Structure formats: C-alpha cells, structure tokens
Length: 381
Ligand SMILES: [Zn+2]
Image (cartoon, rainbow, N blue to C red; front, top):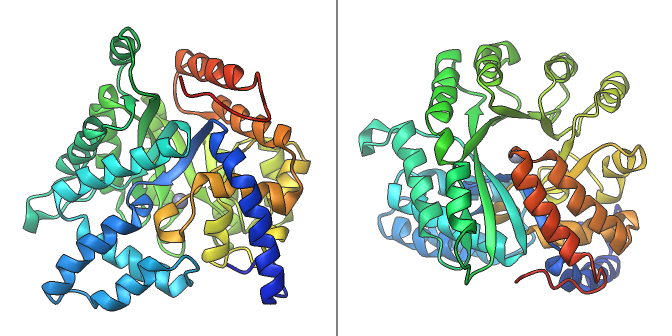
C-alpha cells in the first residue's frame, strides 16, 4: 500500500518502520471490532489450503490465487479475485464453520475483547443451503472456538459462562446479518425475520452492504423499519461512492452506526456531524478499494478533530491483508495520535456496541483494569 502521494521506496520503508514500532503496544491494547465481514476476515493460510482443492478440480487458477494470498500489498483487482474465491468456498457449511472459528480466534489473538461479526446469509439450493442453515453453520463456528472462551447469545448464556471458573481469556461475539444491496425487499425482510428468530443465539443487528453501485435505498427501507420496530440495531454502509440523495436518506433514517462515510459532499458532511452517528472507519480498506487516494488525507482526521464518534475497524482484514492492531498503528502514525488517544478511541468504542448495558459495563471493567499501566497493557487474566 502506498503510504504517501509520492511513493519512493524510502518513504514507504520509513512509514512501515514507524507502523511496526507501534504494533506490540497496539496489539496489547484491548480492542473492540465492530465492522468485520466474516468471509472477508478468513485466514490466508486456510484460503491457500482450500483453494488448492478447487485448483485440483479445475475451478480456479491455483498458482495465481496462491501468489495473491502469499503477498501483502494487494491491488484492487487482486482483492476482487479473493472475493471470488471466497464466494466459491462458502457454499459448504463445514467451511463456513471453520472460517468462523478461525476468524474469532484470530481477532482474540489481537486482543479483541468484543467482536461484532457481520455476514450475508446465503441460500444455494444446489448444495442444500438456506439462509437459516448458513447462519447455523456460523453459530457452529462460535461453539467450535477453542483458543478463547466465547460469550454470546442470551444474558442467561453470559451468566452461565461468567459464573464458572474461566481457564481461557474471554471474547464477546455478536452477529449482524447483512442485507445485500442486490436483494429484493422480500429477501431483505427474510433476512430480518431470520435475525429476529436467532436473537437468543447472538444475532443483535442488521447491516446493509454489498456493491454500492447497485440497489436503491427505498428497496431496503421496509426491512430496516421492521428491524428497528422489533428492536434490532442497524448499521449501514454509507457513502462508499458519491450518492448524495442516498446518504441524506440514510442519515435521516438515523441508524445506530454507519460504515465508511468516504464520499460525502459538504452538506452531507454537515448533516453527519450534526447527527453524531458513530462512523466505523476502515483505513486500509478505503485505500485498497481506492475510495481514499492517500491515507494521510483520510477523513478520519476531520472526524477526529470534530470529536465525532469513530470506531477503528478492519472491514475485510483477510482480503485487505491487515488486522485491527495494524489499523490502530496506522491511525497513530498517519494522524499523530498518542497512546492515550488510541486508548481513548478503543475504550470509547464500547459506547457504540450493539449489546446491552451489562456487557458494556463488563467491557469497561476490562479497559479500566488494563488502563492501570497505559504504557504496557497486560489485560489478559
Ligand atoms: Zn464493510
């Protein structure tokens, strides 16, 4: 990834060295991840292994895909190739379960203590997959996690886990079901109904995502209104491409959060700042997708300066070859943030999670305990 407008090798090397100097501290910082797509977070080594099987069947050009997966600095075209690969792989329930398990373990390894994973339920009659069976495969992944103790689902479940002696670190995991912008109103409502049916299993909200050049806002409003009426929380991918009418309508809808907010004109920007709707900021993603040309010019700086609520997130860490630790380090280097600023951003994110006050209080306790020594985090019990 180009670190600056003029990308001589020396500038990039200096920038990367500075980012590296932040990684250990940022990894130890407890963090909250609120914008991560399940399949876009899949582990590269797993994708290489699974892609090899598809290569043997002649379904993909394995050497080409492997070369992309082994490199870090991926072009937009290469990222799209990986999305295609993942699309092929996630027609198998067992693979979905495996990816979910690994994604949670990977976020936990970065010291994420609360994770909202979002995913678009898929149906594929030819392999016996329904939206419901897809989400059940995801939930099986939550149960399969071994490296850490997952806390999810109802308050009863939380109490059960927290009432026992814990031998492993904990991570709270909640799910958001995504409506794909290609979907019809009926299909979007189906996803909301499914989310409502699965509330006790850890589904807490609805996301609107997918190709920002397709779909019309009005198609999704009935489903989003239903979700709101029934108490589900809502986050929207907003302003990924210039679309002033849609951005204004989205802000008027007052979702609990929005993602990206990259392509806003002045009047929309003013509306956003007045709204105080928290923004999920995904630095590397916006660079890779070429939504923001230069990281140093990212609107993170304006939002931060305006004291607008922001949450540092990854979007698709597996595809964009990043992780939440690196995103915090990038914010420090690009925008001159100090450790105390990053600590504030990480802890303040708790205020914007889609979980109840009890979970928020538990998380605040973890942050407060870690903050005793802000120079060297040692939060894991
Ligand atoms: Zn996203």
